[in-house]
Image 1 (cartoon, rainbow, N blue to C red):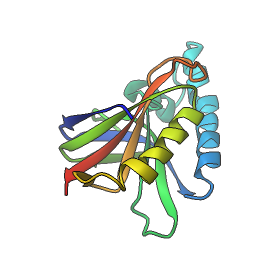
Image 2 (image 1 turned 45 degrees about the vertical axis):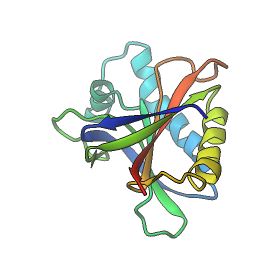
Image 3 (image 1 turned 180 degrees about the vertical axis):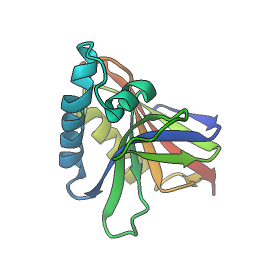
Image 4 (image 1 turned 135 degrees about the vertical axis):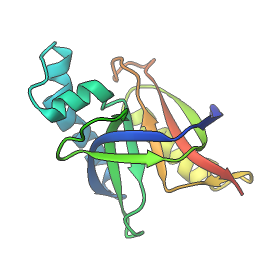
Length: 169
């Protein structure tokens, strides 16, 4: 696995969130992305002007550049997932959420290949192999970020990242 360590100052994100079960996440999260893309991204890519606060926020904050898993529901096999972008201030539209991560270290894993298969494979490797066998780092908070560049997601050369907030053991 290819990765690097990076210290990020506090990071605020804005986006749409839903709760998912761990068992169905690999099937249901891609459907969430498909709904989001159909409702917001396809219109913006065709050059349409935002017609409501949510679409304006998607455009202004780059919502869709990140997918964020947040494990704070209480350990019952469920977690929150956000389709998000970096929040820089301003009105927060109804049905959108803002979350702030404090300054901390993040390990950024490089992922190459078409979505969602490449990312799901790397995610499984990180959480079943790398993290349990790592003697130096543990999760700092129950969250991780998927970072996506603006390019065709079905390309074999598609490059994305998974970011884990870590602290030394």
